[in-house]
Image 1 (cartoon, rainbow, N blue to C red):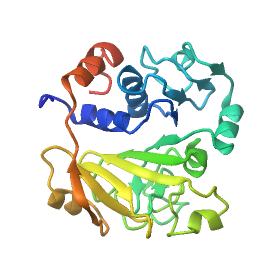
Image 2: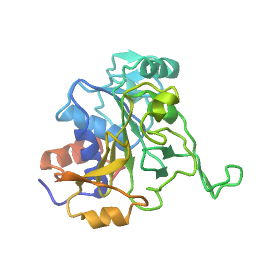
Image 3: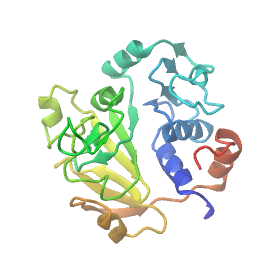
Length: 255
């Protein structure tokens, strides 16, 4: 294990380790692309990355810069389009979906639309949903990647762009979303969160190296239970860092 790494490199490694070999993952621009490439080069050579604009099963030898980049089709098993990809997720063929957001609440609802209570006159207007709502609604397991602070981890999102467990057990099903889908993990600069099966509320599962429970709670704007068997995430290995720095992101775009 190495102690000489950037926070972004730890995030990429933690996200990568969550993906199983042979699984399918809806990959967005940025950190998820690096995580998918790292997974293919380490523990998940048969990972099938799925990109919004049609690339399915690409070998991520070179880092794509966006979800429509030609490298998202490199040695892919299929090259289709956005409607086919959304239908694929609707049919239940995509296991993991990666999302980010400006805000997240205890039930995993994500806001990427506006900051402020007035939608017509917001403090900040954000990019909006894109395909995120489809991903959050239809993929089996949603992994959010976030910077961890009180402004982002809020009791109630200002606008629910992408549904998590909405307001608790059964809410997704009442809204017409597929049973068994929903938030799975939140990977942050401080640790990894999961969700309580009974309440559907977020809870702390693991700390990042050097981080304390108090730091996590102080930077969370809602009551965050702590798992009985709290784990500590291993730092990046020398092999993971070598792959990230020399093969996956040699230009250091995400360091």
